[in-house]
Image (cartoon, rainbow, N blue to C red; front, side):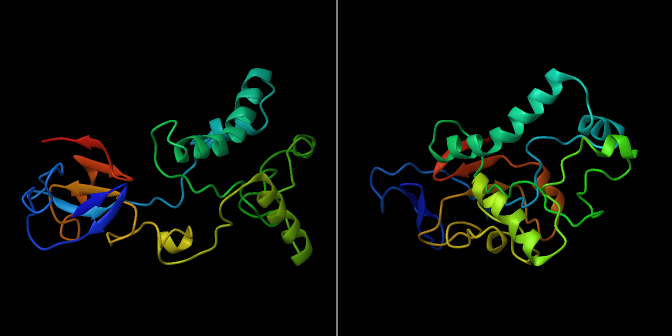
Length: 207
């Protein structure tokens, strides 16, 4: 595989050395199984708390904790932009914004609380009609999100990046991982990823 300027330039048969590409840096992955970079299309960047801890966080009266949560919520877009600009290292972030839900749906934050507590929980993410759902979506667009998520089979298609990522083809971003075996035969090989390249830059290379 030939990588130049952060993109896949060619996918060739067999091992190709510097005799064909003088001056190129050779990364020998002949003993590895090479894959396109993986896509996780559902990640919580601001909180992974669940159970009682997550429930209490919604109605916390601690000013410091509330301020931290607010800053982190605003910061996901800033982190996305900083990675995109190359200011910090990190994965490509496609921000889907806050969860939109029907009233009493999965992401109605009032569920399970007493009525006097419900009054302090935001409901601007709830919608029950075409008009109110358009409002909820426009709020996300105004915030600067990349996508409004819907169900689909392919993660790259879901996130609207299939022309950029999701497979190793000429012209696509050089997002590459290599593992110790064929994950189609043993998915557990994906637990140990000794090689990681993102946009043509090597971030991890264990011999």
